[in-house]
Length: 95
Length: 495
Image 1: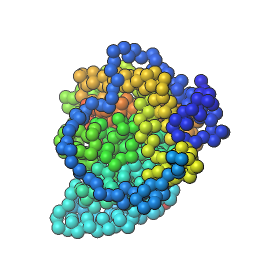
Image 2: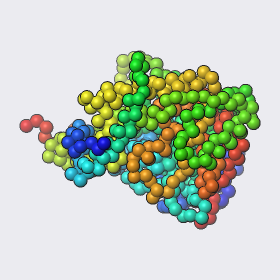
Image 3: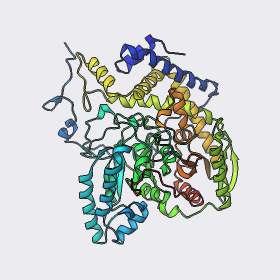
Image 4: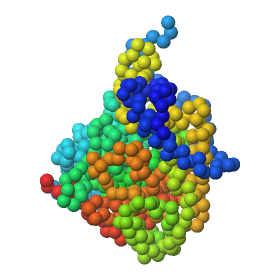
């Protein structure tokens, strides 16, 4: 079943992806068919099955709390699409 | 110069060490092949010939002293998903079109430590999302193989399609790939080369642009398993900077090559007889079983009952993770920016212009399955089914040492035969996804050609951190298949 325009628009808003009006219908159709297809997981009995979070192969580890990297401001900023001195710029957020 | 294109990685290494050839001439021969053939194949996004020549010269100086690492002077290609210090890294996306990382991924640092010479960055599906390398902002990659009597452009598979095509055409001696649901194994099968997806945690993910972090795993792609083994030994290893990296010693994979399969038990999962699978793939699978049996393995039928749920589970888990991972591309700190009147307008315009169609679709589905009211129904349920899929493998490995299956349900298809329904496209990964979900290692080896003269691969799936058994069993298949065919477009063929 196709996802309706309202749902697609709401999801796109959550994902911060701007959509052209012409894209909404075809995306709704594609997304609907993928969602219908994954619905087959409802057949599986998952009673008392724990969710798998990663593969569980690596053991969580602690390390000493010390600085291991840093003082690389210019490297960090080197890919900024727009900056003023040592700052990233964005449109005005607070009036 | 044509002899330069007959080397495998291993034989080139030996010739370099014996000073029969120089690293500079080997690199130049490969750069020349790229120049000749890659205008057509489009396997590279960024070529780095000047850096390669400098690195090759340095390799010769080291070799002249009788020193050097496992890969000194070996020309490789790097999937453009690995960050390379000072060299543009795009993930085949417009949104990272100008991104130049100020650091090196762990996998590529390991290869450089061992002396490899990088020829450039290889094409892929945008953010590694695709099975045909048709979703690249830098254009599709052409498979160097042709169907008999046809000039139709075939896809190289995906997402590591540039890596696969470059290796198959002899433009590089080996390449890095990444595999989230089959992105090393399926393109390897489509282009008649070998590729290994190691155990999750074997190769560091540090500096590899993330798609689905609980699945992404780097691995080698090369013309045969000996070459893959040499590359894997360099790429693998514990890394403090990846919290999922596993601290276990890296074995000598190359030494495992000739161990054989005598006395081992190979499992044949009955659920992998997919409906509608071409008879010649079934026949090749049976041939593989016979080869292993002849080499002394015992064949056991096993059941992986949740196989059919692998793909839908994958598309929930992977897309949920992708929607979260790709949230960082917002036009503020790096990448392309499209201006907007407000911060939200800037985000929306940047992401609308920067992401391709398939990436947008996947982010939206991932956002949907994680959104309020749907999380339990989709995401949590998928995580539980994933547990069942992993248990299937662990149960099977109580009875057998490894599994044998086909790698993909078809051979390479033509660029214009791409299915219009996204679900049809996803079915390409039906045999590769379950091992990814479980985190176990798997590889693909070329095992034959179909009736149209296009390669087919067989997949081996193993126990956690038992890549060695897979390499040994894969080598048995390689030797029995004696796959020496070359694609129509190859560096050693004068056009």
